[in-house]
Structures are given as structure tokens and as C-alpha cells.
Length: 179
Image (cartoon, rainbow, N blue to C red):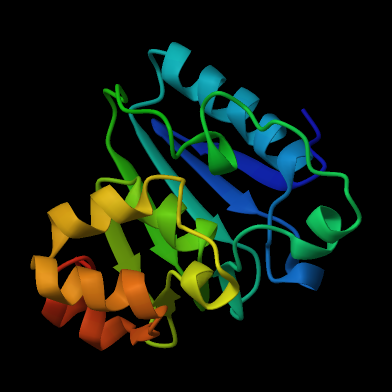
């Protein structure tokens, strides 16, 4: 099947989903999240697929978060019930999920990575929840996932300031498994 906003490759028992909007640093909008919801629904239903991997096309960005140009144009309606990227509001996933983070993972992109069981980061990966800088809140699960993954004071420092964290610091803090 051909997808508009992602590439899907099943390799044996592993589904690799590549966010494919490199021209906007793989930022997602509702249309993309609905498409990804379908991709992940199929993954959850198929017994021959055991592990899911999500990554971003290119080496600049895993996912820059919400596509703000679409939002600014007033084209943002309700998203899928499964959340950003079709994944952030799924709390009953019974298969291992891996985020392979290459480059920037900001806002919803970081929340998408945090929704996975393992987070593997390239050396150039950068993580942040920049929403407070714009008077917003990271509402796709990042707040509660990050505070459960790393010490509370460190998490609050990131959540309240939007501070950027490198892959190496993310590993030291404990939300990155491997660099």
C-alpha cells in the first residue's frame, strides 16, 4: 500500500515506519496522524508483526512535532483518538515499540518517541518540549511520560523551560537507552 506521509516496511516480524515529510522536518498534522493511526492499527492486529520501529526520513529530524504552518492556516481539527502520530494516546500496546531518533525530536516528536518502550538516538539527536515558550503545554503524553522516565526535578526543568537536551545528556538522564 502507498502512504502519503510515511513509509512502511515489514521486515520479517518487524514493522519499520518512517515519517516521510523531510521538507518540514517530519512535522506531523492531523492528516498524517490519522494515516499513522491506520498503520499502527494494522500493526497491532497482525499476529505476524512482533516489534514496531518508528523513525524519521533523513538525518535532520526524527519529528519536529506539530506542523505549525497547518495549524496557523486554521486547518487543525480534532486529531485521532490514538493521539499524535497515531501512537501517543495508546496505553495498551502489547508489542515492543522502538523509537529510532535521528536528529530533532521536538514537542510532539519527543512525545512520540517517549510513547515507545525503547529510545535509540543518533549522536546528533536533540530533544525538547518547547511548548512553554509559546504559552502551550505538551499534551500528547510527554509530561507524564518524561516525569516517570527521569528524576522529577530534571523532567520539570525540561517541561517548564523547553530546554534542549542532547542524545548524550538524554542517556545520562535516562530517557535514551542507547546513543
